[in-house]
Amino acid sequence: MRRIPEVTIRRLTHYLRCIEFIKETGAKILQSKELASFCSISDSLVRRDLSYFGEFGTKGVGYSIDELEKHIKKILGIDRIKKVGLAGVGNIGSALLKFPLKKNGFHIIAAFDIKKELIGKKINGIPVYHEKEIPRIFKEKGLDIGIIAVPQNVAGEVAEKMIKGGVKGILSFALLQCPVSKKIPIRYIEIAAELEILSYEIEKEG
Amino acid sequence: MRRIPEVTIRRLTHYLRCIEFIKETGAKILQSKELASFCSISDSLVRRDLSYFGEFGTKGVGYSIDELEKHIKKILGIDRIKKVGLAGVGNIGSALLKFPLKKNGFHIIAAFDIKKELIGKKINGIPVYHEKEIPRIFKEKGLDIGIIAVPQNVAGEVAEKMIKGGVKGILSFALLQCPVSKKIPIRYIEIAAELEILSYEIEKEG
Image (cartoon, rainbow over all chains, first blue to last red):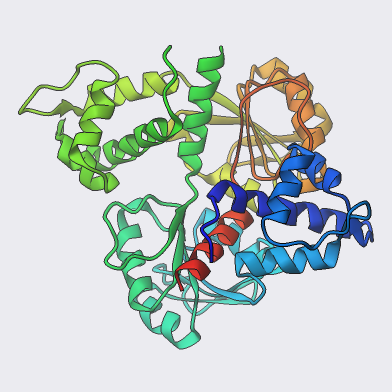
């Protein structure tokens, strides 16, 4: 497949948010200008993005919402379910266990922690295992994605355990301090960093 | 102030994570190669980033951790406390109310929701108000930053309320669908999008 820039891929996820939103109204057809207004971008950019992936709109009529959704999901590889293992059932981890990721095609199958009082329990129907079980459970259940929501100082070893279990990609809320042993895609959600960058942008404006 | 690229600013936040981490060991001096290894980047890039902001390391000795921290915090505008208002006390919102953002200089002063059972309560010491109070409370308490953790379909109106209250910047977990009335810095944390982009990267590799 041709390499698509990350900004374009991110816009595709925004189009999905718009589709989810508009589907609730019962609509079947979507105009590029609706997508554009939802995402605060230009109409022509939307049309360029979508034409990039083949011709599937009808000029003057618009896009079939179902077809557009199917198409974007296929590009993003979420036309089939992705199985997720979550390490760290603290504040953020517990929130994620209750977060409606299923509707986006991400099913959290197992959670991991080291706190005795959590292990063996189920949270929102998801079983919690000890972190030392990560390699075994990831392998046995064929988990695709690992989410890391453990403290910074143990995030690296948790990542290595996931890799041992054959994880294909990681989303981490903690900065991994060392390069991991095997090259797989790793993305970060850095809450403190986003606030710090926002603070910088505020001061710069002021 | 000279415009600094976002990648550099983000690296500064990573240096801060490293400093927090190393401070716990009681160290007073930090070498650029420790920062480099922590952030999985090259030693020369660290030195270039830091020299960019003036000369404050001593060749062969390293950087004073306290000075480096003070300096980076000043650049990021977090040398003084930033007051934060949080809208949406659901899964993510409640997690953020318990998240240790204070140690990064971000103090959540007030939370907002529409659920009757939450309004008037305190969570982790933080009072919860009705969302219609956003403009008044933001103004009265001089809140700098608004965090939006409400559902997608009301995120836009919540943003407008914050702007009415004089907010200086917004961090949103929901995509804001329309351009907001006043131009202020807005950053996003998109959990579903990050997983979708990760999924795309996994498929591309495979």
